[in-house]
Length: 189
Image (tube, rainbow, N blue to C red; front, side, top):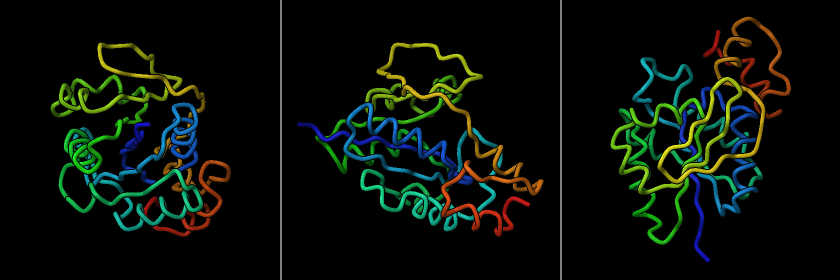
C-alpha cells in the first residue's frame, strides 16, 4: 500500500480550529497516513509578512496539534527563508518520499489562484489537490487531479486577528491550549 502524505502550507498566523478541522477531515476522508503542516516564510501572493514571528507560529502549531499522531509540523519552508513556493516544497517532499502519493490541502480561495502559482503545471504533476470549499468562493473544476474535502465552516486567521485586536473572544475558534497564549501575545494588537 502506498503511503499518502498531505502537505498543508500556509501562514498559520495564527493556527486555528478551521485549519485543524480541514486537515483532520482530509486525513479521515482520504485515508492519509500523515498531514504535514508547513508554515511559510513568505507567501508569494501576499504583500505582507506574517504578523507573528516564525518561532511563535511553529510553537502554536505544535501546541495545537499535540497528541495528533497523524499530524506533523515541519519548519522546512521557514528554515529556507525567503519566498515559499509550493512547487519547491512538493519537489523536496517527493525526493524525501519517492514512493509516497503526495496531496496538497488548500482552500477554494487559493484553488482559484493556482494558475498564478510558480510552475503550477509542475506542481499539478507532483500532487493531488484536496480542496476545502469556502462558502463565499465558488469551486470550479479544472484539468488537474482534485478532490473536495467534505466540510462546511468558515473560520479565518484574518477574523481571529481582528477579534484579538478588538479584544473580542476567540473561544471555540482556536485550540483551547492556544487561546490564552494568543490573548496574551502582542502580535495582533
